[in-house]
Image 1 (cartoon, rainbow, N blue to C red):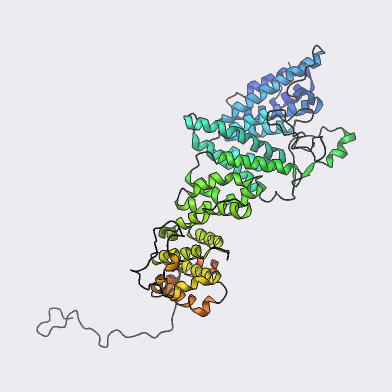
Image 2 (cartoon, helix red, strand yellow; image 1 turned 90 degrees about the vertical axis):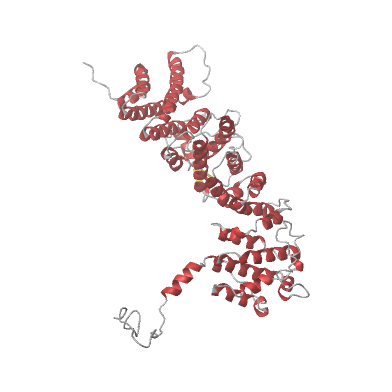
Length: 541
């Protein structure tokens, strides 16, 4: 009686002897088993089988399969292996929707390991990888995506093809979202998770850090082929580098290729990776983002995305739309717009008009108040800004401080004094050189959106005089101290020192402070009862 063959042995036996090829078919059928353990073992066995076949006959896995014509039985067997390999990927793709997290993670790892086996002359199997990415974006739980990010986004070629395939998939899925054929929040969340994972992975690797490749060959024969982008400068030869699986390089050439296992990120390929990185973010930003997701993106966009894009100016439409949205979103979009204007020479003449329009009293009570005031101080840092513009900001901020919480009033007072130090001409607003001193006669137009027409230069800062009698001692003291002539001639105060101050903390410290004060008697004669009545003792003790 023949000895029963285990699932693990099936893969090894099928690869070593064509007579056992039907074991591959059996393993594909076992992928559909109900038992989770059987499915996991079948995945491992198929990986072992194809690893061995790749090592011996990598030409069988070329796509498209070479047309050898009538030939030996071995060549026919190779054609059959090629077809069964495609069927294997189809079966594994179906398991990406399995109910078990363990199975889905295992299937993803097996598919990635199979992709890593591809070597020259076989081009990068981008259609297989595209199907994997598409199923990855359908995952309802984050465990598979997290495993993919941790294990595979450290490879240069995987980063590139994830970005390229995301650019392909998002427009198609966007049309499905608009027609109601796709569950929007799930797809958007998963795409964001992958792109955010790439952002965090690459944060410390953009400059002069070596990254290895998963596959031997990073060229593609598809419409979006990148052979030219992955070629060395001044050479048409495609760079072949190391991967996770076994080395199939002939011993005679192995030493030379080992010297090219890793590639500097500063190589010419960085240009193409940056282009794909920018394209992927631009296509993602077309999706219907949640409010929380949009705020998160705006927070890191100017630091982690724009510097690594081939042309950051392509973000102008998105940032302009966000700046018109109002509220916190407009505040967070300012930094990106400012970077485009000052670093990438974008012509955006309405920037300061939009910034001025955001100055509303509720801004000083928002969650992002500290960030907004920090950005506002940075935007007004230049000493070459027009006098009317700085005067308008000074007047509007001073007016806002009257109704702001104590924390906001403190920050405004410090900022206004700093603006006067940068622009000494604005000190005239304090001294009333022939201007009105009454709040009722103030000519300032607080509702005017154009800083040039608000008449701030004709006004007087009666608001500062009002803040000098503020109910919070710190606010009153700052208003009295910072606007003295001798103080206005001194260096600027650090805004950051006052951004962390809060009225609640100071009140708590004052209450809890122990003072060395003797107890004061509250009554010179002890009370003997509730009421002291001479005509009766009803209320007497």
